[in-house]
Length: 204
Ligand code: 5GP
Image (cartoon, rainbow, N blue to C red):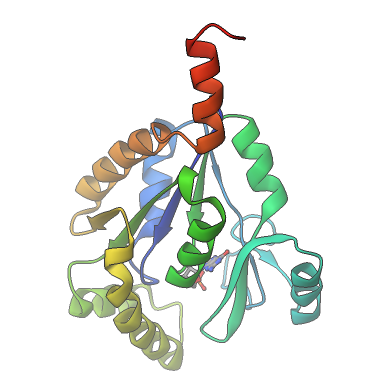
């Protein structure tokens, strides 16, 4: 069987990266899609690990060349998912995990909806999100305010997702995420269905 796609969206500070990190050994084989972005690296972030950090010019050249499965402008910067590594990981039978915003989720669904499982991840309330963002405090006040404003918008798209993970305690959120990863692998795309029927009938 070829791989599947699991899209995670939700406000910055929802705990997506922590959840993935803590679940990592239990969801193999997977490929975490490294997005490209024009935003500046945060302290400790490395090019090619958390993101591919690109100039606006390089990003726009990538758009022109059709390199992106989807891209969006978030908080005033471009963010996008390159197609090539996604196809490679899918062909290797991996679960491809995206951490993208709600606009990206919409676009990816249009392109590859039959292979996508999606979840919106959020802390239980806006108040709790704000507390976590301040605790993380790697950002200036203006950036935190922008993220909170964005979160108020993003939560309105929650009903576009297949599942919701309320990240109240990290342990429970990790369990939910592991279960979701298993479920995502059970989704069978159109082309795979045809191949499966062929095999099932003994035609191959
Ligand atoms: P951050 O700057 O906190 O790393 O990410 C900001 C937002 O950009 C998050 O909501 C994250 O999900 C979103 N994001 C990250 N990568 C991508 C991407 O490749 N495409 C889209 N559409 N959004 C992304």
